[in-house]
Structures are given as structure tokens and as C-alpha cells.
Amino acid sequence: MDVKLTEELISRLPKTDLHVHLDGSLRIETIIDLAKKQKVKIPTLEPEKLKQLLSAENAHSLEEYLQGFQYTLLVLQTEDALFRAAYELAEDSANENIRYTEIRYCPILHTKKGLNLTSVSNAVLDGLAQAEKEFNIKTGVIVTGMRNMSPDVSLKLVGLAIAYKGKSVVGFDLAGEEMNYPAKEHREAFDLALKNNLNITIHAGEGYGPSSIHQAIHYCGAHRIGHGTRLIEDGDLLNYVNDHRIPIEICLSSNLHTKAVKSFAAHPLPLFYDLGLRVTLNTDNRLISNTTMTKEFMLTVKHFGFDYKHIKNLIINGFKSSFLPYREKSIMLNKILGEMAEIEKQEMKAEAVEYEDKL
Image (cartoon, rainbow, N blue to C red; front, side, top):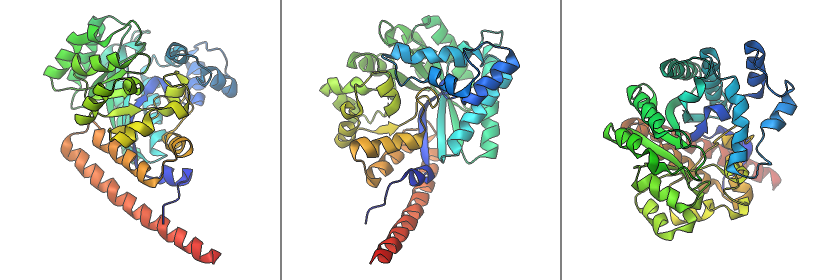
């Protein structure tokens, strides 16, 4: 008897979210409240209208997808706002039983009103630490550089990540427009990160082809790939990624909205899964893509026919692919496997009772 997949069940399952942006995952009400308190002008103070404005569901490219961030960043220029945004993101994640999440953001984007990088970092880390005390969740931070910024900025941000390594910062990322902004231009920053044993994940193969993924791995030493949808276009590189167990951070809703794929039917996730790649499922931007981890998993059920075994393997991949230290990762994985086994027993028992009642 198979376990019946429902939103309620998937919400109860312990999960990870390894690819989620702080500035793309605010609550609409929080943006409005912060705008009022900070006297920051945003296009509208009406929740539904603002939600529609920030939604990327009708975007035609990655560049259009990123436009909504100009408004979220307007209100994320104070320590209180950063603390609140980090705390609420962890709370929202915990509410759907995400047990471990790696939240990424670019600190330099939050210095437009005079905050320095350490003040920005401390505010985010303090917000997450407070959430960890109150909710059943573990968090890590990935400091993110931007492709369109100077490589010197990336170097500075890697230095910041190294300074906070061991203080909840678990890695470094490079995000932003891929077209015309190759990752290899930031190679000095990645060399410094690798010399200091810092984990690396890079957005690649989303807005540009597999050569972007090749650069991320072979020029920049990426341990994980963000999105990676275009990997399907290079079989040899795909096999290399598979053979070396380099995780792919899949974000279904976002991939559709940025036009990394034309449709869910065209998404390579099912093939990646069948070939044995270590694929993980993530939200990317909870606000901009109007999604949750539960919704992302339900998309695999609806569009790919994934069953409970698929879902369980994706969840396990998430915990295996985290940037947690190995021992901590092993302890967490064993714990959630026990919890999932108990949930499976409960579901099977409930389904057996339901079946008997129908006889």
C-alpha cells in the first residue's frame, strides 16, 4: 500500500530548503509595515496590489524576474528590518517543518543607508538565532556575491564570509544575471574561499548554458550548483556532475518564472532524478514566486507523477547536500529518517482503516 500524498502530509514531513533568498522571501505585510515605519515610498500599500506587483509569474526572463527585488531591498536597510526578515523567514520555514535551511543574501545590498557589513551580518544572524530558540529549525547563512558587481566586491564579501565562518555562515554564492557576467571573472574570490575551506555554491545554468556550470565547477570550485537546468544540454558535463555527486539546487516555480524552462513538462528534474543526480528541491524566493516547500513538492506530484518514494529521496538528498559539518549532518539525517518512518506507519495505518471502512 502506497502512502497517499497530500499537502498536509508533505507539510508534516521534515524537509530542507538549501536555496532561498532573504530579500525574495519577505511577508507582504512586513514590507508594508516596514515601509510605513521607515517612511519609505513603495508603489502601493494595499497587500493584494503589492503582491501582484512583486509576483514574477508573468516575467519573461531572469532580468524581469529580478525587478521585484528593488522594492524589497528598499525596506531592508536597517538592522531591525534585517533581524525581522531573517526571523520571519525562519518562522515561516519552521511552520511547514523545514528543519534545516540555508538562507542566502548579499550583505552589500543592505548598506545603502549607512550600515556597514558587520552590522548587516549581525542583524541577520541575530534574527536567525532568535528563531532557532523559538522554533524547531536549524539555519545557516550563505553570503552571496553578485555577478554584475566588481570582482573586488566579491573578494570583500568572501572575506566577510570567512570572518563569520563557524558563526552560522556556511558558504559563499554568486548570483545575478548570468549573461555577459561570467563567474570566472570572480575567480580570485573563489580561490580565497577555497583556501579557507569555505563551501561554495553558484547560480549557474539558469540564464545561460552549460558552459556557465562548467565555469562554476572547474574555474570556481563549486560544491553545489544553483538551478543547473541547462545541464541537460551537455551530456558529458552531466555525467561528471553525477559521478562527483555535485548537488543541484532545483527551484521549480522560479525556473518557470525566469524562463529557465518553457514549461513544467520541459523541466529536466525527472530525467536528472532517473539518472541518479543528487537533486534537491528548494523555494528560491517564497514571495517573488509565491511558493513554499510544500508547494514545490506538490508540483512534482502534479506534473511529474512523483510518488512518496520520490519525495522521500528528494528530502534525503536535501539533508545529504547541506553545508552542515558531516557529524551534525549525519545526526540530523538519522533523526529525520526515524521521524519519517513513524509518519509512514501512521499514514499506512490510517489508510488501512479507511480501506476496511469501505468494505
